Length: 74
Image (cartoon, rainbow, N blue to C red; front, side):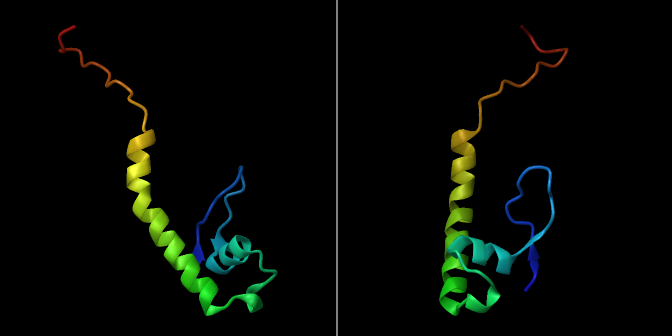
């Protein structure tokens, strides 16, 4: 399987494979335990999470005022 950046923790920015992500997500000890059901469920969950992401980004984005340009009125 291909590599995926996945969740990064701390200063360790190593790449995590999709197989490793699926094993972690479902508590599997290694790739030999992965079934098509695990893969289908993982893909469906990722799609739902990505669909919600723009909404969550807008919801939690702080309202930081834009710095004024030198010509802006006070």
